[in-house]
Image 1 (tube, rainbow, N blue to C red):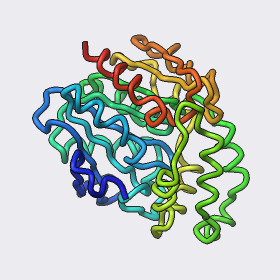
Image 2: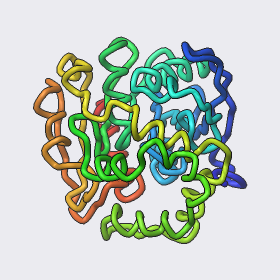
Image 3: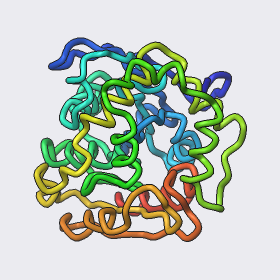
Amino acid sequence: MFPAADARFTTTYLRLSLSAGPLVVRSVECGDHGADRVVLCVHGWACSVYSYRRLMPLLAELGMRVIAIDLPGHGLSEKPSDPRYYALDAQVEVVFAAMQALEIEHCILVGHSMGGPICARAAVLAPERVDGLALLAPAGFGTERDIRVLSTLTPSVVKPLLPYIMRRWMVAAVFNAVYGTIYRPTARDVDEYWAPSQFDGCVSAMWDLLHRFEWGAGIECGFGQISAPTVIIDGASDNLVIRRWVRRYAEVIQNATVRVVGHCGHVVPEEAPDLVAGAIRELIC
């Protein structure tokens, strides 16, 4: 699994002390450890640090220290069965605890999909620690169509069965729907996203997030209070998040701009890494 055998990246396992209990999460880093500018990347639902593999080296080339973490239940981080770990503020606590473990006082936060509201909420709770926000196809202002469908199709009675029916072809089928045309996933991409589902607790964690994460809590969570410079990047061919909810971020965040990427689907950090890197560079200029 990524980033094995890729000398550009280093991997660390962080032991975090959280309200719900101790937790080990994976951190992958790229770039100059002593750089003045630090970027912390937070992935989306059912993703991992792998979704930032194309973006991180680009930011490192711009002189930044770049870190991505696997959230609880994802990638190679621990996958606790306690549902308390999967609420929005619990995920934000993981971000802050990881920053502390990595000795990061403040940074730019990059959030994709579910990572968008996590990063935005962090900017509300601790604005002094957030230098800027890059929100990539962010959820957070409404329950997306696919979330509603998946929630309806996965009541609690089927939760114990889900690990036994997860198949690689399902990941490939989802990819056909969520990517645009400027980047098409490879067989390795499918394997990297499918592999974590084979670890104990992963599929159950995805169910907990699906049903317990506050997908539409933007107003209630105070996103209108955010003052950090913010860029929202929206894929024009995104079939997952609802367009008006993505643009809602720019309506409520006072220092926000929106960029729309033609032919880009939902997985913006993989599909348009050059554009994202440029937008992040502009945040700090």
